[in-house]
Length: 115
Image (cartoon, rainbow, N blue to C red; front, top):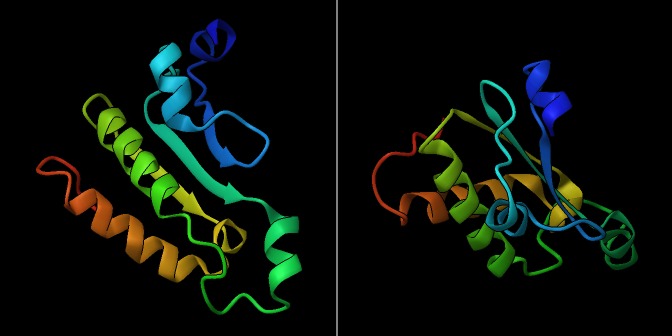
């Protein structure tokens, strides 16, 4: 993390099946290493692909994860701007996941601008 900070590089915080979640990492350490934060909702590609050959609908309910990610994004946004990427393989359909995330962010109160 010191190396990232020394180079003003941003750490990509991923919500991916084999990694600690962004919120978990934030409770253990200062994850802000650059001028903004970057959160990636990636999920588990193999799990989604077992359930559907097309990525046109939600196939895995990740509501709890989305709520936790929204909590992390709100906390990060108190310090720096936050960019968030959502992959189709997170739950099966990125546009629906984005709408769910936007609602979760909006229900958390003031201070987060969703574009």
